[in-house]
Length: 152
Image (cartoon, rainbow, N blue to C red; front, side, top):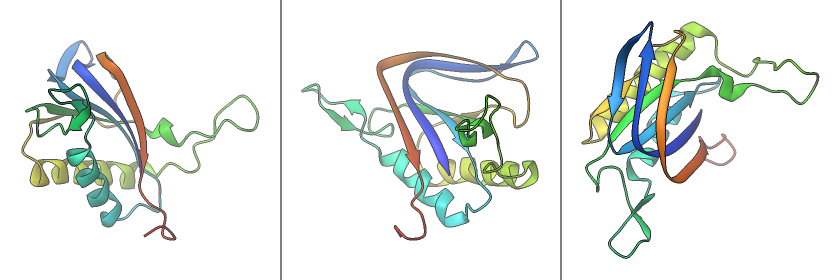
């Protein structure tokens, strides 16, 4: 599982001209799922994101989590995080999970964020053409990847 985490002042997602998800201060998550991801990977990632200390404290150090600052999360599915463009000019998406698995995993991940966390969680729409707008705060952007079986 790969998640691109962006600390934002605000973010929103629009589908067919309608805003379907919108947050103020918090985290925009672009979520990619691969075919080997398990429920353990989803839970690990949800816990990591909820506790990730990338918001500044009173001394200006990144020492607070999204929960600590009363922020929110906007989670958007993005299979292209598993795109591989090392060969040729057209990316290969063989490492991305098939749509059925990816949708179920994405939905489970969102449920885990809501269950394990205490912050509002908004979402995009799986497999839709989305217009995602954000105002980066910092900017602070991190790529997280769930541990491999060897790392666990």
